[in-house]
Length: 168
Image 1: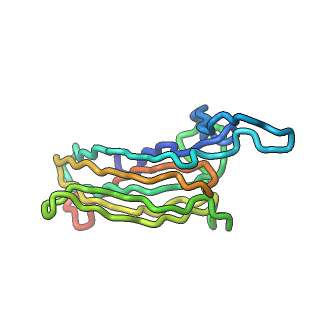
Image 2: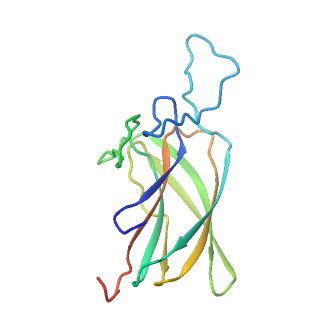
């Protein structure tokens, strides 16, 4: 994406928190009792295995960053998400994310990140990759959606000018 115009992908959404997508990603319940939640569970146990192609079409070096975010629940379609500062104390996501990147030596680089997100928290990048002008790279993100998490979450890709760039 253009710098300061991140792109976010919904990882888990609910009937009452589709983040404007209209996508209720809760699986249908086989049995429902009158006093139980309805479509209020996440994609528990689902493995996400995403290959994200990153290409710098600009004439200056950029940094591409990935973060997990837990916005305030909403069904409103909007260009922006709502976050809380400070975030609420409840933990909504706790899990390990595996990231594989291309590197000169060795051929691939694997890193693991333990991410903890509170409700309403705007995520800090768990990885930032420099991408030279005109270059491309693929980053692979893998994780299981943990069974004790509460939706919604977003996987957000953002870019910024590389520090020390002549075009800053």
